[in-house]
Image 1 (cartoon, rainbow over the protein chains, first blue to last red):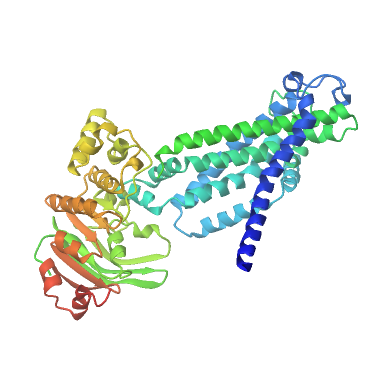
Image 2 (tube, chains in turn brown, purple):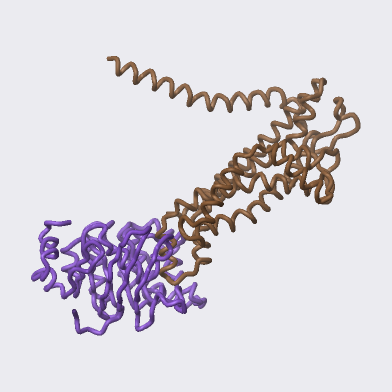
Length: 280
Length: 254
């Protein structure tokens, strides 16, 4: 009898915890929707701030939306250009448990745990060192530093569990390591997409990295050396305003950010499912 | 030993993995166009020996290999030997089939493609020829564009054999190639081996004595990293010279 009660008690506790996860998500969506939906007008997504925008007058945050998308896409592409060779090297080229592979994995684990404000500060130092100003370029580079360890780690997890025999199959057909690498990439497409998605979500939502490096401006950047607004900072600046309409626009910005992330999530899921049909 | 012409000659091969002496002073001549099976208890080194033949073993870290493995007189472990060239000579059939993440057609065409075959008609011919060779053609000819993973395990293993044969190897290495298969699929693979030995040298690792008896011409009994006995199937299985072999064949040690 006692054991049965125990069993039921813990089952109840687990269900409670499990439900609370979905509960938190629903609460977040409800909060930003209830406060932000009213301000989520066509103007907000299609116009840049007009004079007096920050005291409640007309305009929108198109500058921040475009800025965030530029930085995120740029950082994800740059991040992939660095991390795919890393992952291929430690999984295909390096011998098992080689010194370099072990060190690389450790390094990316440590980098993964570094808070983004530290990347922000580091990016700022680098920026000053190279004589750059706050700009789209500086922001993108800093966010790239943030996403590289995410990409490396997530992709490495997937590449590591590919059965050794797949590689052996290619080798025993007389394949080179490069040919094996290509097969590995095919095999890992869903994992690579997950990695891109994670890094995209992290990059678009990160405020600390762009705070010192990308700056903030009301116009849409037209070149890499111009500063740019970003969605997280648009939320941050407007939320700290005492004017209620401006605060609500911060929630609208949060809603836009969440919608972008959700769209990316679902598209990525769709493609990863479609592309994984040939997988073992 | 045998009087046959050797295809693979192993001379004083020693393998250490992580400091453990896995293969001890192996010397053996594997006869040309025959089926030679390695038998022995788990962990005796039979798979390791097989993997030294196509140099997959040195992919692992911490492996030390000394001695010689000669294929057609060419030393595999000489620094001038090109590994991809060696591996092309040998088809590998692993314990579980691992089709490449692509469709049935591309799996068979893959080897030919990486070795430079681009002609569509020729690739079609190769795919059909080798799929027929493993009697899979009739089962898959209408769904060549399906992912290879849709096939049953037994079909996948035959597909992997076709894929290996399509690069025109001289030697086929099988690492317990039927251990994941049902009895019917196993029988088909065994029949294929018997057909293939006209053209290829086959080296199999197996722990099923009955299988070794059914398919092999020669048997090598390996125990604790050493070759205990090497002879024709009848000699080793029916009239073993060594006590260890006798004990293993009778099932006292496993």
